[in-house]
Image (cartoon, rainbow, N blue to C red; front, side):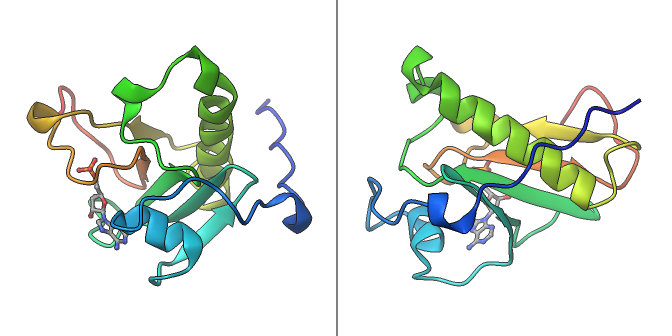
Length: 134
Ligand code: AMP
């Protein structure tokens, strides 16, 4: 039996003042400065639809706080990374791909084609995928 979904954060737990980079597109989405199709929020994360979806479901989970990429994350970011993972799993369930499966991807650096320098976890699903990834 699937584990129960963690409860969403209450709205009053969402912080309004976090470290931001004014030139970062994902920081601007988090602050509401540019629009995005937001599907979930927690105290530390925002989840929205990828503007260029690679599958029927393609979401991005980002920390509210600007963190350049996964290579910059340390043990001190453990709670935040766990919060991102929980948000990704909850969003996948809400999108109806909890049982069929999904891929969680974090790209780091040029060989992985990381294009936005703000940590984000892709949640991709709704179709059969191949392995190894391209
Ligand atoms: P990555 O290549 O891992 O850095 O992924 C960056 C992702 O961000 C790509 O899949 C883009 O399609 C997506 N993206 C870029 N700008 C936006 C935006 N304004 N709203 C939603 N997704 C975006």
